[in-house]
Image 1 (cartoon, rainbow, N blue to C red):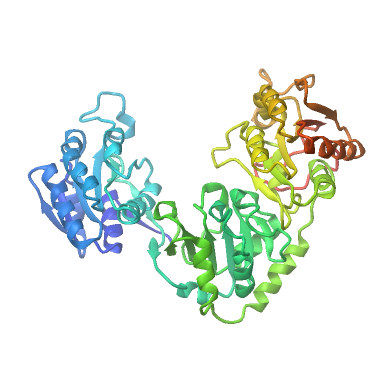
Image 2 (cartoon, one colour):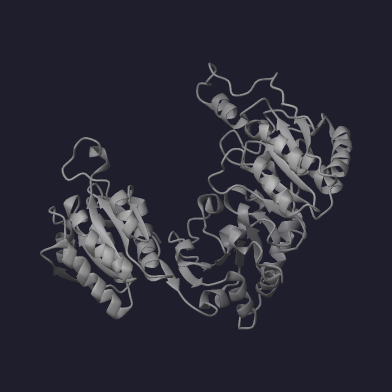
Length: 541
């Protein structure tokens, strides 16, 4: 169950208690809210009240070096933070796990010559492993947990966390008990009867021995991936159910709502991977994380964490006790997969043609626009057992996929490389086609032409009232043709089949190909109410 605490410093003391911190060093801000919280706490840590912030950091550093665990110092803002820099410098060079918690200017007063206003994150970042300012009440507890984790794990060192002046009076959500570092097979995994495996981008190039699939079979677990984790697992496996979070098929919702353990392999659990997860996941339902570095662990969710190579860890688990029978859950997983059906018209029909015509070793490089996003929704597109996938990060930089496809082709000259892109993204890249012609990088571009920036146009059309003065798409917008690159137009399935067949021949000879596919702006994976994955009217591209 979620809980709330009154005031930032009350929350700070609770998180420090959870991490076993019994002593603080420092000279707190002159509002003395920390002292008030200490006097109200049932079992407060000891505060060593110092006369100088530099000495507080020196004391915390000595404490950390001797104990080997994270020590905590507290200071005010402005000159208090700059006074602490010498201590941070020493902590950094001593590789001491020190967490410095400082006050900060209320965001409403920034830029108004506020009392002791300073961009403290910028000032202290060069001296720390991580420096962060918490702006919102619901971000404070995860940030505190991350600060403790980053300071102590990997190469130890100091971190800085800023708690601005508007948070000491705020109501702070306290969800779960934080991550728990462990070794071996966590008891939560052995006890789970309805597990889910979530495979992230950290498993790319680490699943050659199919350890993920073998673990899923032993556990009876459903397999989901993040967008960046696609291609890491066999998508023909009977336990594979597509992507998690934003791109999850609605038919998989029951699995997520009834699962009793989520095991994340090599994932940072970014927002798109966890969007619309049931609230109890990461609270009463543990999220077990396996990741190569502590800095990559998410502190949003409670559950045991193992720092190390996820594939090697999973392999070691297979040699141990993974608990009892989960046959009923495995049956539900495979039944759910059988219930998934691709859409049979529009852009999913285009994706079906790719699967049918292009050999299974193909690599699909994607953008993240309004309509190329259809490829994220399994089973509209499947990488199969041998296919590859390259997608943008959570930054979704426009034009990334179009250009990245050339880099993929340079690495894999003998495999078919296709880029599924919108015409807006392709327009940013089109001038670079000359480079592909010169370097004989035979990428096949499937360009969905809706006249420009379809995502923005749809937002304008759905605005209340609709925004009509400026348009982001034009019916007469044409693609630039590049000498030496092959261009084709595919207005229906037969033309697409012929164009793909010809493109396979030409790209194998090093000729980049552009297949232009006119599409309706309405053929979108985005529902009008803002959700994804809904069926759309039957319409061929």
